Image 1: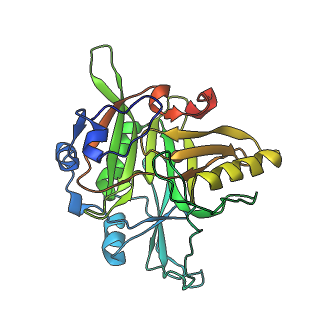
Image 2: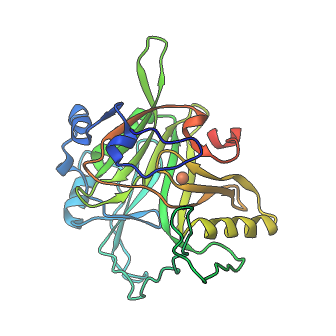
Length: 302
Ligand SMILES: [Fe+2]
């Protein structure tokens, strides 16, 4: 990768950003003996539920040997959008809902106006002033969630072989005998050539206990995030970590505790990947979490 100057950012192709410590997705899947097209094909993350193109197929599949913990199909015809839902329990006991045939609402999705930015060498905003109103950050969508697990390899195998969930980055530690032991993975929903979020799901090995780490909601832009941060701070809510810029996924992040003690995140400006993006191998360490921002608090890693 061309050297990025100190105190600068650059937008570079995925293959260059990932670097030489990488592997094509198809090779990784083949090594795990995973046949990509045999997996349940999820479409998107939505309220922590997924859609599936063929209910009959998935139901048969779940009731069969691979997913013995699948619940009976629940009718959602009374719920907004209708459809059906199956809850499966993963090998560690986390419930995972798959939604089929839920119809989107007819409400048109509107996006906030794009704030025009002036750069040192490109000043396109002329006789126009940027003005903002304080307020909470409007959420566009649920972007991702992640689990801390005591059965990292079992869950990695379960999710990547059962669903079209494929690693984007594999974060490793070096073992005493100089092997790379993967301890965290950021995964995308594999829709082939279609560009998707860098991660919709992540897993992190945690010897202390299994729990949901956080879920994360996309907001419009950096200013929205800063205004939302100030809003929450003024209301007396408790910040966990942020605002900062992640390296893996590039998102600008902002983590908060909700009033029950769950960690939730606002993010903006995340990377997109597709099936051609190589899987990156990245050494673990707090310095791999953020390129700028406050020091990562210990609680974030627990
Ligand atoms: Fe996140």
